[in-house]
Length: 536
Image (tube, rainbow, N blue to C red; front, side, top):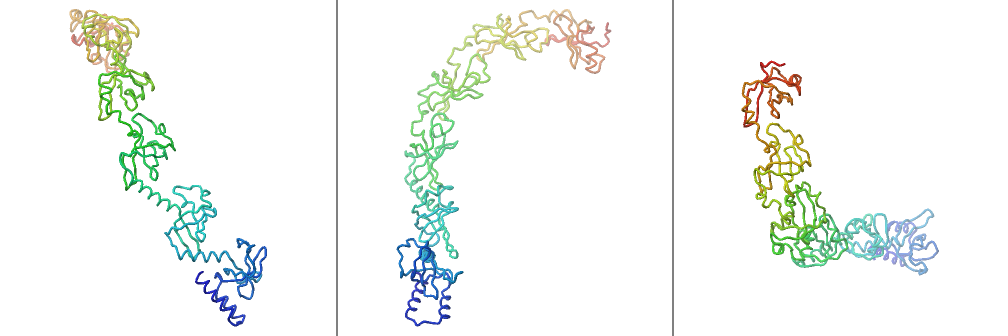
């Protein structure tokens, strides 16, 4: 019973023994109590919609019957405590409330015992806008944002439950209390984490449940604390995404790799439960040994081949073929292909293996110097044309290059297509053999005698010659003065001043007279001049 109720009770008892006062004194005494106070009253009539109570005033007070939990249990003469709401309503009656009296008394009892920050227990009674109402002796409000640890959970799941909450705000003027379940859950979580951390040992194996999966790994709940299982610690083999090995809800065993008690971070490993396959890799796959593997990745510079789960090696693009020039490995291999490889090198510290595919086949260049020697005449098929020459296939896997400079003694070859065609059978002379670098040089012009010695004996500086313009450039015109022998008429050796004038004065096919001004036999060049030379 509150202090105010005790005072009113004493006042009521005194009234029974005291002589009757005047109506004015009586009313003054009543008003002195004031609206909002709790007083004692006696039930004098019970009706379906209301209960009439005498509180010792000139008129009875009315309480709506719905404020009584068990109306049928009431009887006339029962003494109850009520709260005075109004001294007079529109009908001149006193308005009383039983529930508000209980609430007022409950409020006093609760705030005397607890304060902000204290933990109390209560029952969730109903759902309201923005949260839940609880009975902790008085009604308290549990906001949805403070009901769960993360976000908004299912408020309906808490209805009817008796739970512990923390008082976060008491408003005496409004007589309302705000509580939080989240604060206690967070505290429990931290305590649980600390307890688990005390039990953890690096290297120990623990059971956990996969809680969440990301691109970089999976979070595993160890029973009070979450640990990160990074993708690099999931398997000794190649995986592209953690979902390839685990899914949310999976029960797995993991190894504790490290943990930090201050940050509450735990690193986990799955692959560490098994022996590292790289530990004995040099014994299982010694250098020079051959194995069969599966292509697991294709990149511009080569292909990665898996020898076994967790052991991959790189076949560099240069180690794919002895004879074929592979530009794009994706045109030759696809993921899943089975290939034969040879171990070329092992780096255990960095877990790298260099592999070769061509080494599993015989090298056609082995002993090439014994089969081809400089000066030898050979026959082959033009396999490919480039700007700098033509590749001629002499045998399976053996190509020789005829450079443009070795196609003619006298003619300036701008592109091999001017002399040769792809697929054409040709004869050539071996110029150079390099077994170590797999190179073989061929010559076409070497099949005939060098005509420049004869030209040098027939022509001399100062001699007049006749010729036909074969090509015009910005710097001059080329003139054929003997079969396949050209001389250059530089623009500075003409009476002209510009290239456009040169092209109109010396069009291709025009026959002209010129004087030889220079012969460079080593460079196979003849310089001409038309200055002072009459033209027909």
